[in-house]
Length: 249
Image (tube, rainbow, N blue to C red):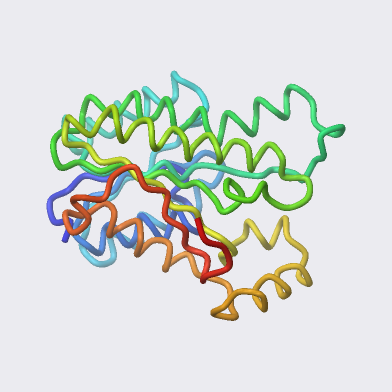
């Protein structure tokens, strides 16, 4: 489905990012696995991809900083040439649950930088390498739809910005033949929720979901691979929910 394609996945060292990188590689793409903190995880992702005969590299870069985004581009071009077919803006984080009176400017800059600024400037940096038939997939969130849980004001707001940015880029880049879509995961069984969501809350949400379970990182990756492929060639500007039917857009 993606044979011969070049893919860049930000935040590709673990959880959803790793599942996406591996899925794209299994479909035939060569993959750049971006990471910031988890070198071990990134190396494990690359090793898994290489284990089934596909090419991948790991590149450390803080994608909330322009100079490091440029470095990510340089390493991508060095490894795979002056072309990128698939860009997945997956890097993101909640960091801590803080209410309105608990966060300060530094925390605002951190959350908005990793979740929204990164998507904007990674897209700006890599778009010149992308041509007709290329696909950009952004990771938004169900939180962008409903405001998120307690203490996630900035996270939900940053993902709402990603949702709107996706629509704007679909209009701007569509005439060039570059499609831009986003996915909005609900409760997905990852370290994100291990760290930030209480077990009883997870159980309640899963029980409230029509499918009566959490989703998996692999299910999210399957949707990303579809949006990255020619099989979704007329899908553009959509923010697609993947939440087991818990909420509808």
